[in-house]
Length: 66
Image 1 (cartoon, rainbow, N blue to C red):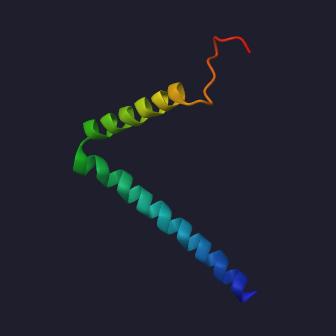
Image 2: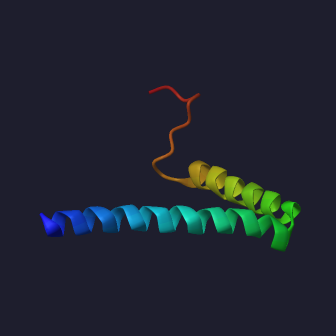
């Protein structure tokens, strides 16, 4: 029972710590880098994802017949 309570508390604490860290990072990054940098980074990630979809051998062209 004690071990179960410990791991349950540990998981809850870990969740709180991760949530707090994510909040601090998402709050501070725009202040440190500026919003344009984040928008450019998002656009770059989207561009890479689209390129990966186009060039992936698993990609299927929706216009081509099955």
